[in-house]
Image 1: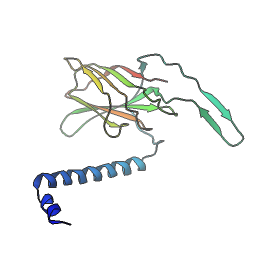
Image 2: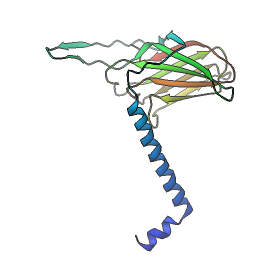
Image 3: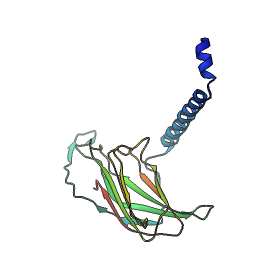
Image 4: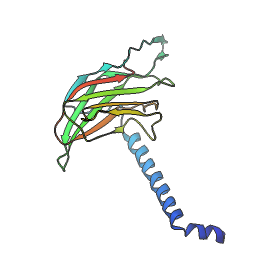
Length: 186
């Protein structure tokens, strides 16, 4: 290591950047390990099963090819299933947490497909975030929240991972979901 390199490493800004990069790498690896340890067929307890509506109609075709050894599905695009699970609980600080769990069909996510979600709540929410289903940065995000914080619109062109998409909603009071619309829907 040269003296010039050593002097750069003593710079507090460089040190902070290196530490941040290291922590980010470690957290990413931990996230991958947790994701890898989860089974795609894990059973989740749910409080409610809700039917969801489609933002737009999509018509897709599926072709089944049968052979003696396997069944393959060709040209099947991945969609969000029509039923979702809703889980509710209260954290140690008295914050109400509602989780909306969307599952997907098998297939591939069409390039350029936009994931869209619109929610209407019975009361106002404080914040929302996706805690599963999207890894890393989201691209071309559009979101809209009405002034009363009772309606949420979200869209992104980022393809979700092949796992359940979990949206976590936090609120000061117990709120119900009056309407869920998602696209692309099976």
